[in-house]
Length: 69
Image 1 (spheres, rainbow, N blue to C red):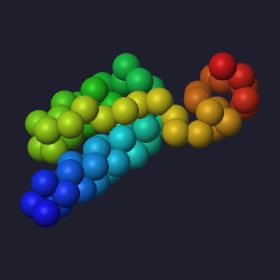
Image 2 (spheres, helix red, strand yellow):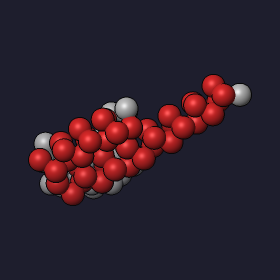
Image 3 (spheres, rainbow, N blue to C red):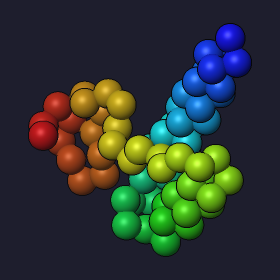
């Protein structure tokens, strides 16, 4: 039971880190200083590396045409 609880906590931390990372990347760019500081902070605090790619491929990144790769 404790393994399942720890797995759920890890998954929740990863989900929060990913959503925060995506938001920062969309707002400040993947290589932006704010994004990089947030990634470092989340990695240190949560022990997971945030994902920066948009979850929905049909959401345009800055400078991208909606639906293009």
